[in-house]
Length: 155
Image (tube, rainbow, N blue to C red):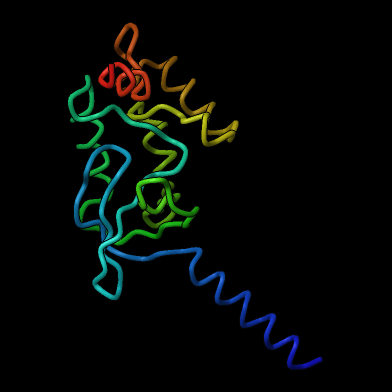
């Protein structure tokens, strides 16, 4: 019985060790993607879970990227690992101390809530609040969602 308990504890601690990644944000790709340098000097591409930001060639793409950069570039962050996307990037919720960076991007009007991949009603409310206050990209009359912009570029 003791061996079973020890093995179970070991398995749980092993799983938990992969649930969070600590490191320094060393490069910002766009408003929802950055490169993290972990304690082993391994670079990990991180995609912020539950949000989608304007692309580089899209209206407000550079502003969104700048905002993420101001928040986390060259700073130590913690990533709650949600798994990998189809491009091999780690999907995560990013924290800078007690600040939830994913939520901050929504709150400041720099991102859409990506409802296709996240059903969090609180996050949906953050987007609605930013829209109502006309913050960030929401000052535009009818901003184009990044998924629509990417789709139009493929055609």
